[in-house]
Length: 201
Image 1: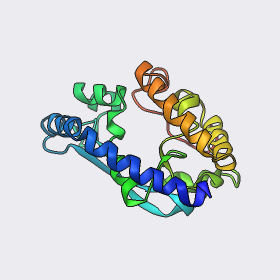
Image 2: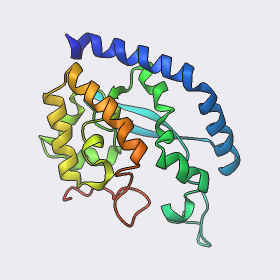
Image 3: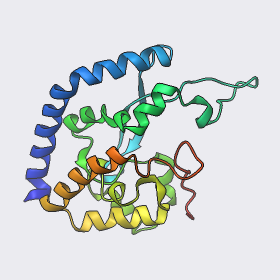
């Protein structure tokens, strides 16, 4: 009953309340990123959701679009703006995903939505992470986030799919605040962003 009915009601109610309460912060961050990113405060990207259905995820844009002399984008570390680094460190870049939760594309708690090109790289067990709505935060995020291997992340995602409950979601919800406060596991050591999944790591 929780997974099929109550979870969605809680998601919608909490997301709506959070957006209303955090709207001043939302506006301040949006204005700051508007000037830092040449009028582009938001980042939209197609991601696979429940049953691998694609949707557009909404995040605050933490990197600019600067390119080198050959017209290629600079590295992630070079494009990460000062305000973008702060927004990412505090996980405020995830805030607009509350809109995705309201729409129904995402849940507050669930496996993180990854890139569409990864779909062909998953094994049969890893694909099960798409049996539920993806989340703003999840079991893998409170157990290592980007500092653990892809294999371990997927193991944790599938564990969550098999153990969804109100108690588990509550634990993830409160543990997320602890992780954000300590800025734990934001990226892998020596990298500005997480390493891409290639099917082997």
